[in-house]
Image 1 (tube, rainbow, N blue to C red):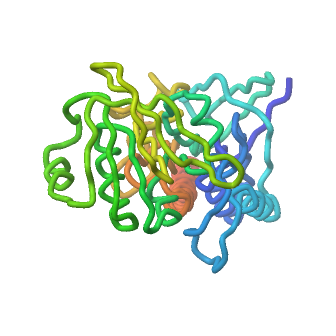
Image 2 (cartoon, helix red, strand yellow; image 1 turned 30 degrees about the horizontal axis):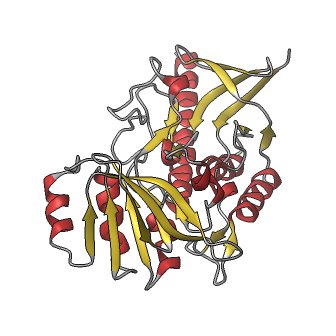
Length: 322
């Protein structure tokens, strides 16, 4: 059993974690990144990326993450293939244990474990992910300009995504399995006032219909939740908007979380309820959930951590001088 010690320990290797690593390494903190169960984060399952700054052409998500990792390693980051299963945040330095049995000790901890979109769990949905089926309208809506699309869900996320998609599509259908929305009233008012959106009540997706070849999604087969009757809705894009799961199970009881289990941070910072622990990316952001915003908060986390360590070191020197 080996113990790995660092000034900055980072959990998660998506845009947030790797951006924190790049800034932390450049500040001389020799960060260790524990990559977790999905090295590279959600972008490794994303094909076309058209909205990341700095690229005129469409780039591939896995390639972007490879480049970020290479940059992080180039400036002094150590990448570890492990998944943390136990944490002790009661005192500094923080002590974490990996599934491998390895021990990781860090003077500061940056949590960038992300969040996963909730899916319906259909085989046809899995087969058509990235081929007409998406869980992020702000990421992929641009690809459906002028096309007929549908959003599945009934909460704030679904209503917001339906409204957003009207920027690209003249024909948006919102499908909800009940006869009323859970979304905030102000969002519902905006939805019902938008002529580009129609609502199908008491309907759930039975099948995402594959057109075969390069066609991808061509329709949704719907089941009426009251009568059981089947119907078909022709669409080229289907957006599943039923919420997200932040990867915070490991930190319940150790850090303060909000009602949706996202890590709470001090407004305008990445500081959590435990001094020396910082959170960035989708694990603390349930509003924007973009690669570029995740990278931005990763930078913030590294700068916050650097300042924290500088203050802690100054206090030690001052105490020793007394």
